Picture 1 (cartoon, rainbow, N blue to C red):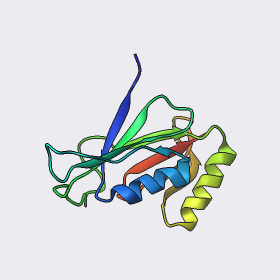
Picture 2 (spheres, rainbow, N blue to C red; picture 1 turned 90 degrees about the horizontal axis):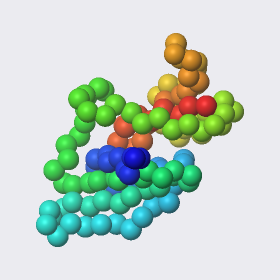
Picture 3 (tube, rainbow, N blue to C red; picture 1 turned 90 degrees about the vertical axis):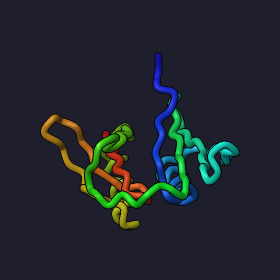
Picture 4 (cartoon, rainbow, N blue to C red; picture 1 turned 120 degrees about the vertical axis):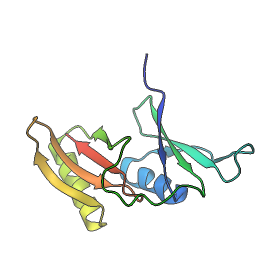
Amino acid sequence: MHIAHIAVWTRDLIAAAEFWRRYFHAEIGDTYRSARRPGFVSCFVTVPGERASIELMSAPWIADASATEHAGWDHLAISLGSRAAVDEMAARCHADGLLVSAPRTTGDGFYEAVIAAPDGTRIEITA
């Protein structure tokens, strides 16, 4: 058994896909447009070395998520493999205005930083 994919709603499919390509070197799959649900558009992104993919989904009925925290998924954690890789990605994201929380060692022993995707979805990058 393994996770096939996770799905994330976004208001801007292109910006979300570009984020994953730019920061995680993800492959972006073909865009799917639903004939059954007009306005629904999605694509899958795959991070190198992963079996699971991320389905980015967009539709005109998706509202702006103004709450910092809400019911449902809170974040995705991606291990970059080393503290140096976390520091490097955090510096890039800081320069681009995407860093939410600087690198630190958490109380449960993880070395991590938190960055934000274009819609504000939080992603922990860990060593």
